[in-house]
Image (cartoon, rainbow, N blue to C red; front, side):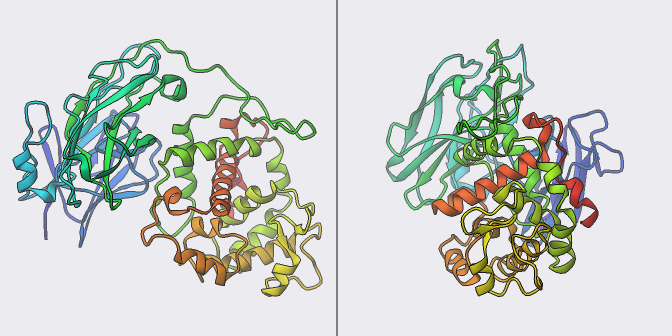
Length: 490
């Protein structure tokens, strides 16, 4: 079996079984003086098929080669593991050589050809932020990419902006590429979040600081390009490069009204700070971790995050916690005690579908907006007795929804709550038909779900969830996280 090693400066640690990393001294690798790193931040695990880094729900996250991870990711020889955006360790596999670097910090061509197994043996390190508030989007010299499993032999590098540049106005990104005839698409990302893509050569995009006010935070931000071949295979991963960042004064927007209902007869949301896409992504990651199954989800797609960000306005309205508290026992009993489902599921479904207002709308009834016809036809009301979906107690609505979701979560999606939420409203047979249209590997939620209705439901599920768990972020000073209603049931 291969032997893994972790290096920090002159110190080297062997990865045998599990290697723990964190701030406290009881970790195998300790960062005692780094407040950005959580007490028990991450683990590097040795498994039969290789080595994995696992984030343990850290406050400031874990990244590999500058790209934030969700849950866990497999490590390759030479990867940089970055904890809390400050502590960095270098992972290596004994007996494997790291790719040779040329004078620009990119891999030598010969080294790439001789070591295809080092396809992600690359490093991206974030330098410390400098200066006052501003937007730093700096691309390292020779930002090369080299071939992985794809047969496409294209190469690319970003030649503008240059290292040390500060983006203060709309700026064109210039890319120099070779052998790009087999390239189907070029994707541009900031800190791993997609913001532009193109199918045509030369591969260019425009970056405008006005569209990224959340980046004016004094921290480091990585601008990257990824090439994808015409079969949809990723051609390149970032090559080793140390990025330098500088910030200058570019003030982000002042406090704005983030939850505003254009319907003049409806409620208007509270005022609070604008929530950035980066914050939406981090809250989405924490939201996912509340569900069991250890499924890996990618929530870095920029369009997905923008849709969630927009939809939060509908849920950022005061009073949801008090309404939810009225139905705490029916939801906990039905979902947890009777059907053994994850405790958060019932609450977030109700939040996303009705905002805990059970009033009938058309044929949809109760907290979960189910029709009596659907519930009766599938016998989901078997535990309701004489109660109905519209009863004030909402016992029947909770029981029917829990029985239904158990059939979907375990009978169709093998414990996958996220895709079950997207399929809500389909009977198990139709949900199975829809599941068959999804890719075998569906960690990328947005690019796996293509149908409008299911996209709408998953966006609402996430938007409702992150508002309900982070009310203060959305200016809801009188509300509390929904987890206070179910944490005793978990």
